[in-house]
Amino acid sequence: MFFFLLNLALSDLGSICTTVPKAMHNSLWDTRDISYSGCAAQVFMFAFFISSEFSLLTIMCYDRYVSICKPLHYGTLLGSRACAHMAAAAWASAFLNALLQTANTFSLPLCHGNALGQFFCEIPQILKLSCSKSYLRELGLLAISICLFSGCFLFIVFSYVQIFRPVLRIPSEQGWHKAFSTCLPHLAVVSLFFSTAAFSYLKPPSMSLPSLDLALSVLYSVVPPALNPLIYSLRNQELKAAVWRLITGQLKKH
Image 1: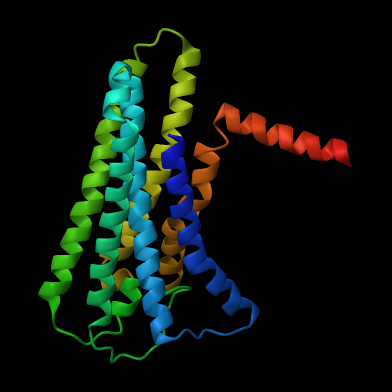
Image 2: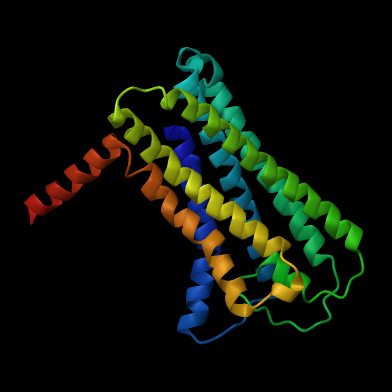
């Protein structure tokens, strides 16, 4: 779990650093400019980190499933080599998806201006500027992304159904509370991330409003990476104890 937490932390940090610093710079300096190459790099990095985050959340859900439902097989199913292979597969699939999405988006001719109604370079906003008629290529890549994310989401839901079945057999309410307080926040963040991202990318053009687009983008690009450390780190007793010792040690020095 700590190995996957490290990978998730890197993914969260990367996705936040891809969008927020540039948005803060533009806000402080009252500018809205970004270069073409900078926009392409932002699209690639954001797609890469978001895809890797969802893949890692799926793997971490599988880690919980094995630890709760098949604890005697944990060392076999999730050894160090298996964990390394799963993490490598998550990053590799994210890289491939980001490369395909970025190459497809910036290979289209843009003829409807150069103003994006968003605080970062988002693929749906860029496609609005395109005058291309290559719908089949766009639909093909969209279908690949939908299959990837839908498969991960369905796997997460199925895993939690399998997790909750033995949890509900626990006789003590304390065991229920501990299991649900750990699993439900993670499931809520994943649902928020998936639903807002899917709606943002799949909603019809008639429902495209600047305020709605901005709210959806914040919900799936900023909120989940910000909440993940709280859900995974601060609920861990060892990490809370270490943070508490650090705080109390600093207070004693002062």
